[in-house]
Image (cartoon, rainbow, N blue to C red; front, side):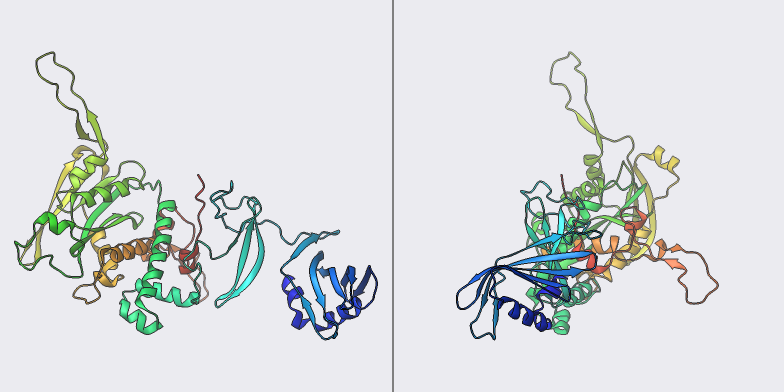
Length: 475
């Protein structure tokens, strides 16, 4: 309706009526034609300068009235100059009519941190104010009734303030997740590497927000942990064995790096991923991130990495204190004991000439509870998941020239892949059978994602939804 009003080129006949109307030489007059009502309040001077003019346009369920100010009429009677810098609109509801700007559930939170409705969605405070054209179609402009701040539909998304068409940005980010090299994406789309890295940084920030908001209180019974070897810029940190120490090698930003992954096999969910050196600090970070997502104390299984047992005890423990004995000397310091519900087992692989010769299973913590749980020590599903990750991210491929030049870029790709895998990538083993039909070419399976299996979402996300979703982050 508003577009119909402001599109003057398509309403020249209405403008001619406004010409005749303004030449009426009356201080207050009305003109009604084809349902459009024009009314002027005052004008003066030889050039017929109109101080205020209201236009009432009929709509489906009522009328919508516009009040224009500063309308200048040229003496040549050939040009109508309308200054819309100062204009306001008032919606008038008649019998059976309704207001145009009505607050709806737009799934748009207020971005102003000073507003009392900041971050809250579908609270009746957001209205659609207008639309504006872009290279990818029309986009809405919203307004918060509490703080009167206007914001764009693409604000706080990957496409915020981008002049590039959204289709090109989506294609570049999809190719990153499909093992395409950075130079190859630049050659296909005709953009610079810095531009693609900027889009990747935006996608990583959005994916990190999704992981923090949605990955909470996931009830799982088993978590598998493993590491994948990779490197940044070069394979070795030193040319010779004694060039640098092991500590310096672990703290270096270049050289050997590892992708540590935790995996919930019953939902095919990836709770956490950590990119960095294979150290106790990163193992502890992985366990802490997983513990903040899962509900309760699940059973943990991994390979023979020695940093996992102390990291698990650091996260799941009980403080044991010793009473005073009354004898000379200081009493014993409190010690950390494993939580009574903690179960941890290892599957240690034995290799000969580069091939697995055997697997030894051992229980480190919680042997009695493990026997009653009915589970078995295994990391086979996570090993298969590692293959999926390597076939999705170019820097993790074997014998490739597409390795990362910076560790931060590798971290951003892993975070982006985690959100994409959990919410937007259907998994074959999670599909559900629908009602069978006798007709041909009827869908018999409904796709499912790890996020749907874990109860975190109710549908398969589109790729654009992954890049534009806005969450309710109110306190």
